[in-house]
Each structure stands twice: as structure tokens, then as C-alpha cells.
Amino acid sequence: MGIFRRRGGGGGAQDPRRALGARGEEEAARFLRRAGMEILGRNIKTRLGELDLVARDGGVLVFVEVKARRADAFAPPELSVTAAKQRKLVALAQAYLQELPEPLPPCRFDVVAVLLPDGGPPRIRHIRDAFTA
Image (cartoon, rainbow, N blue to C red; front, side, top):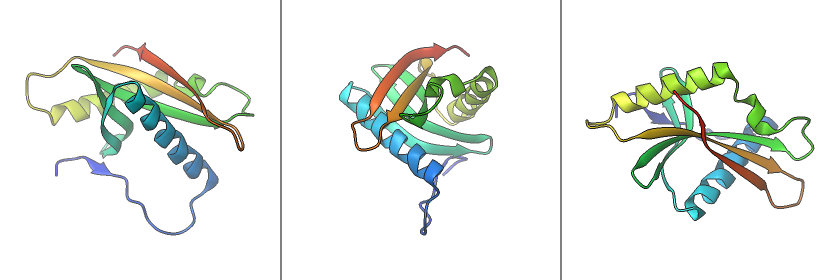
């Protein structure tokens, strides 16, 4: 199985932040599939942390960070992908790539910002090639 595990769905009540994040990831995955991307994995855990989504866009492997907020949030969700978060995502992607056979495909980092209004459809912003390694 390697170092990657999918996050378990333990029973019981889910805290509101986790529920918001899970809904945001589901909306992001749906959006990306509609845009023609293939979702290869969700909530991929490594010893270093978790990748939200890994997708394929043509011949490119895409590491997707999903940021979801309620529509009345103070700041846009994508602003929380700080330089420190970017460094962590690069390390997570490197751990993921170590498990793949050579030759490695070209890769990029995308951010999907999801605003979730109460009772309305989500507003989604896909930032392709949001940062570089």
C-alpha cells in the first residue's frame, strides 16, 4: 500500500470546519471533472501531511489544494495558501512522486477556492499553476 492512505470516514458527528472542507473538496472535484480533468486521488495522506486532490490534466499531474470558506468570510480562500503552505505542498508532492515509476510526468500546483453560500450554489475559482516548486 505504500505510504499513502485515504483519510478514514470515522462515524459520529463531524465538526463544522471539517464538514465545510469536505463539501468544498467535493465541489472542487466535481468542478475539475467537468473541466475535463481526471481525479486520481482525494485526501491522500503521507507521513508529512495530506494532499487534497491529485488529478491528471492531459499529460500533466496536478496537485490541487482546495480552500473552502463560507460566502460571508472576511478574506478570499486562496489567500490562505501562504508561502509556508506552498513549501509544505511541494514536500507532499515530492513524497507522492517518490512512489511513482520513472519517468515522472510534468507537474503543476493548482488552487481551487470554493465559496459556499447558505442555500445557494457554490462559487468556484480555479487558479491553474498557482505557484511553482
